[in-house]
Length: 169
Image 1: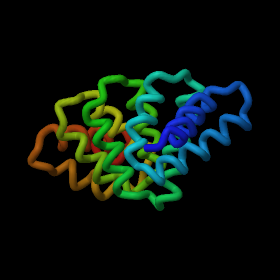
Image 2: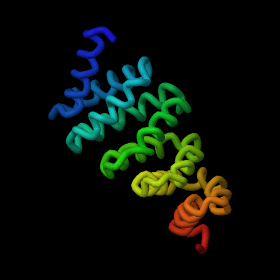
Image 3: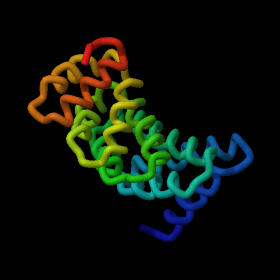
């Protein structure tokens, strides 16, 4: 990566915390373009979310959503976010990852359900919350997951369905 590319990215991350909304929105667009051109930037954005304040976290997350929209809900972006979620221990970071994944709707359902089999309870909780946000498009896959041989998957799916009033667990 050229130094100027790193400078553009770093500046956009800084601008995501600007007190000026126009600057934050411009940063969001620059970051989305950076993510689209270099998907390995997803990890850098996740790290910036970890280090940011509430405002910058919001705009950094919106950059991920915009990148996903530009990439038409790219499976690569979803898989990368799921990978970051799988090992994440910070509940706040997971909350933002979950919101981004939920924005992709049905395309994110199977990858989110896959998190139910992990040992990481925070990642499982994030997946459940994201699936609740997705709602109806997740129903069929959640019903199938509620019949899984894996007890963790079965219980997590059942709890999401129960919370949604669809299933008596």
